[in-house]
Structure formats: structure tokens, C-alpha cells
Image (cartoon, rainbow, N blue to C red; front, top):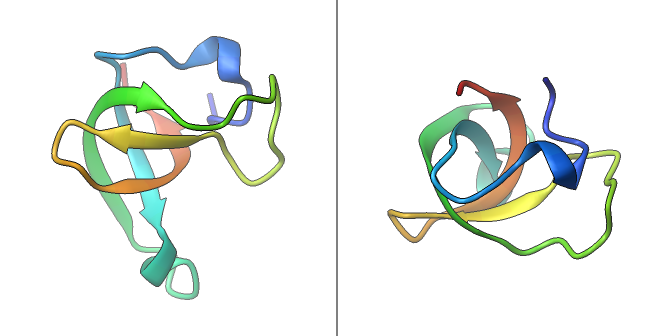
Length: 64
């Protein structure tokens, strides 16, 4: 799953996100979802989430 559908993502899920400053390089950061920040049911670039570490980015990969 690629993280573009809000229904696929929930708190406690392990994901890889791209941070705002890493969008050009595409570097992914792994972490656990704390809460979802995107309200729309779908976002073409990925649902924006806050990780338990406090980092914010868009989901690129769902690990499980």
C-alpha cells in the first residue's frame, strides 16, 4: 500500500514517510503513526501524519 488512502492508515501503524525537507531527495523516515493530519479521504502525494517521534510527513509506504 502506498499511503494515499486515509482509510488504510491508523495510529500505531508502522510506516515510512517523506519529510518536507527530504521531498527533493526522496529520503524516507520510518516510524509509528501517532495521528493523522490530512482530513481528506485521499491525497495523491500521501496522507500527512505525525509520528510518535513528533516528525511530520507524508506516508509513502505502509510497513504494517
